[in-house]
Image (tube, rainbow, N blue to C red):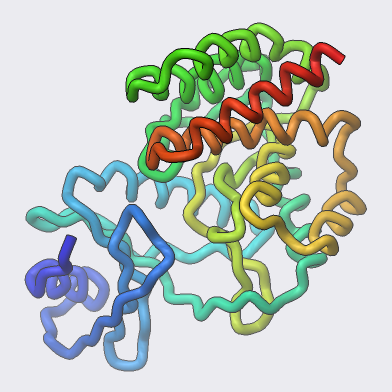
Length: 293
């Protein structure tokens, strides 16, 4: 969507408390769901996300997640300035953080472990939210196996079926769902999770401090965040070394991370289609083969 002058003027007024035409914008890349802008008012810069008005709930969920992560005081999280709806637009304004790929990955690993030390007595979250543009159910559950069966893997498989991805994906997916107790044979603490922690949602500020953003938060197995960091390119080795030094992972992680990343591959299938279906099927077959060994 295009950012109209009226919606930008409204956003500026929400930030400053007054009407003004003294602002500038420049487009930012990196997103495939929202339009992203750098908004400059005087000497102050802001990061603005724009979408259609019916995307307001997605921004409301993002604000909820950012505030929860901020409350953990573990990593730097962008501060929310304001968000809302105006005519046909929904918007979210965050502090503008100049980002870089240069920083201390070991510090990032330690800080992620600190985030995961924030725990709950059940898996889930206080509200449903979104993973990208996909609804993400989060009903509270004391059983990690049941939570992952019903609200993660099973949910994505059902969604794939409604999108026409049936046949082997569903039959083998059902076989895998039936074997979840054999794969999830540990008792993870429900940790506060970023929920979508790939390299595109992680960077460093200009002081080298780790920054995470675009969350899909819930309480669950901390290994799901670690698994996601390995899915699209991975993080530096020092990141994983520092995390394991701060809080060692349980035995069996190398197998479970494939299961956890299957959730994200299925989500990409549901969002984008293409070759993600074959990638998901390959991952399911690999997990079934490991169970039969």
